[in-house]
Length: 63
Image (tube, rainbow, N blue to C red):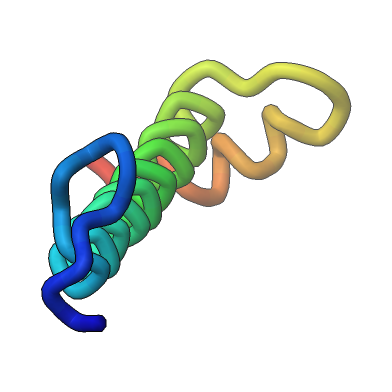
């Protein structure tokens, strides 16, 4: 059954699972980078209540 093709991609089940693992890891990496980017933008240009306090405490470390 390991050689059976998965319809309609033409991949075997093992190849499909390997590709799925790459997609999941890529999504996690992208998400982590996005979170870091949002934190840095928030530190530089705070929005909402309390943002100025966080920016004042974080920005000296980023300079």
